Length: 563
Ligand code: ATP
Ligand code: MG
Ligand code: MG
Ligand code: MG
Image 1 (cartoon, rainbow, N blue to C red):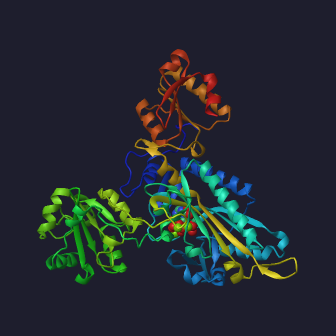
Image 2: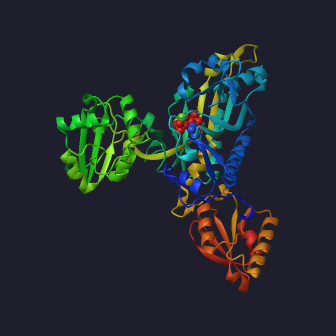
């Protein structure tokens, strides 16, 4: 592909709402384009990466006996009423009506449709085991779509469903999918961890999540340093562990509990009942002043925190940022969005200059019950030395450690939940009708693209794992105005493409610096540079995007080396 013909709208700046590297770099590199909140276009480069992930997923599903189908996105309410989920799925389900006033939803997942498909097509145990999958857009009305491809309202998922006659069959399917997922994420060049998880909305029993380890992940994983045990924090029960926050005693002594006047002022400012503002604490840590406002019930937190910043994480920012969120005139507010006439805050804030707004329901809650999913992140931002005394590992007793991950896949043993509710049975060897035993297995294909960027980037841009790169090589002609150089570049481009390689050819008449910057941003792992040296002695410069290392190669050796 010639860059003179390609649609790669790279950006100099990224929108302020792009908070994580994957979101920023995919926008900046011209991979994706936003249409509305949680809805993205995959531009040509983004589409190529998505297709690479899809191809890997398909190969691994097929390897383990999956057969690909394509089910309707639009699903009738009747099926969801049969399973009982129309009532319970809640606000994430995108519900719509047709012109005859019949109810439908846009599929967030396909257990109902596939159970219906199978009950219509098979009647005997002889058709088992059966593994069907699809690669398709899913729709979820996420409360806060964010982080670009990471949490969309429309996203691409691979969902496979297994059908067996007995538990042993389900166990085998589960093990196969565990292996298939391991293969997929290995082949995508990702560092990941399968962890035990909570069954949640889908229902059913045993389940693992596959998490790509990354700082910006929304999941917190409890990992045993001594054995294989790893679990999502939800089931590792660390929420209730007592912790010291902040860690050192000296910092703890500096906690200020505000007086009644302060509480009144805060309540008035936030327009809440003062009882809901019962605890407002401040403490210092390493010279930073941290203010914790604890508000009332969840609803109040929601409204107020949203009002301050459209984000459900704890919010930590410098004063200027908080003022921007509040649309306030600098000077009219105290350090953390509080009235200025609270001297203690105003004074001390000058020293550290950081503030933090927290929502909680109980006094001292964040003090004694750290929710790692949220507070650890804040502690990290604030450079607090938070010590988490995690639970003992249920397998070996060692103390669990914690890390963050991005959930890129999940596998479930469903059992007969859907087959019983929807009457999906087969006749066994004795002619007796038995409900199918099911499993379901999802991979967030588009989220995997974002997760790969979270794990593989530097301050210059993306660094794609070889298997996901939109092109194998980025061929850069340093100066297309130099006819000799341009001719060599053209010849090289032809030789590489003729050899079947995927080549992005920067044939633009741009300055070399612009080209190098774009190449680093786009992140193709191999850059081949046709420069002065090539004109003089025929050698081509090979730059490794990850290490920055350069070497000169002979054109004849090039194709072999790329492959
Ligand atoms: P999350 O906990 O992040 O909300 P989930 O547990 O609700 O995800 P599943 O129902 O397990 O998601 O769906 C299978 C996979 O689809 C997930 O593991 C994830 O990779 C992906 N996924 C789920 N929701 C989204 C979304 N809003 N945007 C992109 N990918 C998603
Ligand atoms: Mg979800
Ligand atoms: Mg989840
Ligand atoms: Mg899940």
